[in-house]
Length: 159
Image 1 (cartoon, rainbow, N blue to C red):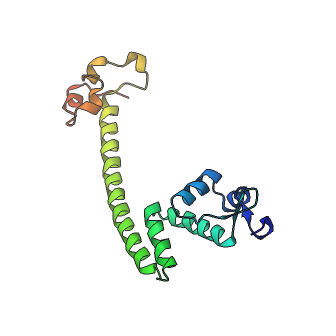
Image 2: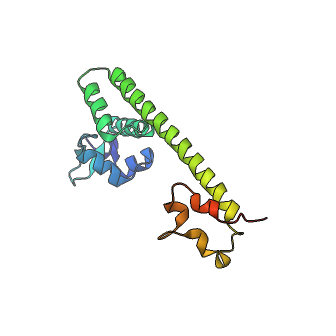
Image 3: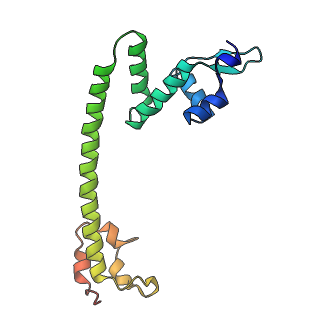
């Protein structure tokens, strides 16, 4: 294959918007086939390699791991339509994402509640005049105490 029939790695990198190091990594992991080489040992990638690289990038957008992508590519290379397996993978990712979102919603509420309780006892954001007794803990009682009882003992800040 001549350079005229393919892309050098730098051009593939620019066209696919993927760093050269990533292309080499994908090649080392078997996600991209080893390209043809010129007489001077420059890698020359085919249009198929560019399309495969674009597929990998799109699959990563859906948070598929490189191992999952490798499985999909292997099925395709075997002449097996991988869409059923992709559907299963995406369903698994949706379940995990939904669980993560729920955890994040709970965490956000916990943070908001903690922040509101802290703000009721904290003076304005002037840290130099911060009453140390409010922070009773080895580092910061606002984080260390799970029950916020130490906040309830403090006098509320009047705005």
